[in-house]
Image: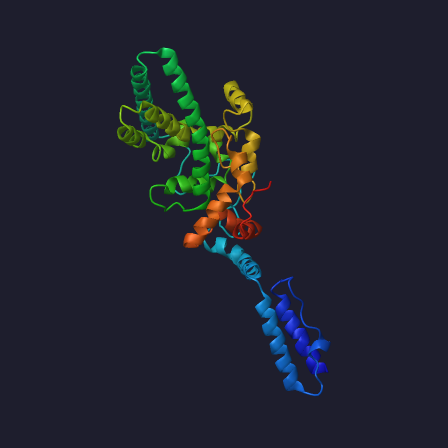
Length: 349
C-alpha cells in the first residue's frame, strides 16, 4: 500500500507540472490491484498515463510550450545585452532630469556638419515641394483656389501618414536591431538608449536632435521618389516631401513632449493642446515598461487605433514565426509575450 501510494503521488506531481486543467491525476484507489502485485500497479499506472497524454489537445500543448518559454524569457534579454535600464544590463535609469548620453560616440553639442546636413535637407525638400505645387498649378490651368485646395489636402494626408510612419519606425527601432545594425544603427541606438535616459533629448539643440533622421528621410529619398513619379504626378512629390520632412521633425516634436509648458514656446503648447503634435501625457504612456504602445510621435493620432487593434503585437508574432526573433517588448514582459504567442494582440493600458 505504501509503495502504490508513493507511485501515485509521484505521477500526480509530474502531471500537474504541465498546469493542464483538462484532467486530474489518477487517485490511489484507481491504481490498487492487490491480487496482481507491484507489476500490475506499474502496468496500470503506465496505461493511465498514456490515456491522459492522448487526451491533451493541441491548444493545451501550446500552453505548455508558452509556459516553458516564458520561464526562460528573463534570461534571454540579459544575454542579449538589453539596454533599457534593466538590472544586469549595465545601465541605470538616471535620477532626476539630468542628461545622460548612453550611446558610445554620441554628444549633446551641435556640430557644423549636423547644421549643414539638416539645413541642406530641408532646403532641398522645400524646393521639391515648391516645384510640385508649381506643376500642380500648371495642371489645373492656373486655377489658384483648386491648386491651394489640392495642396492643402495633400499636406494634411501626408501629416496623418507621417504619424503612422513615425509609429512604425519607432516600434521597429525600439524592438529590433542595435547600434551595429547597418544604416539604421545610430537611430536604433538613440531610440533604445532614450528609454534609459529619457530627459537627455531635452538638452539637445535642434540640428543635434534631428540629424540622424536625415539619413533615411533625406533629400536622396525624396528626389528618388519624385523622379520615379515624374512631373505628371506632382502630388506624389508634394506628399513625400512633406512626409519625409515630418518624419525628421518628429524627433523635435518628441523632444517637446518631454519638456514642460514653461520650457516650450506658446505655439508649441497650443499645437499640443489641439492634438496637432504629440502631447506630454500621451507620450508619457509610452515610457512605461515594456514600452509596447503609443509609438506614434508626430501627432499621436494613430496610437489608439494601432494599440486597440493589436497591430504591433500581430507584427511581432509574424516576425517571431518567420525567424524566431523576439521583440524587446516581449523580452521585457513575459506576460505580454505569452499573450502575443496566444494571439491576444490587443494592448490594454
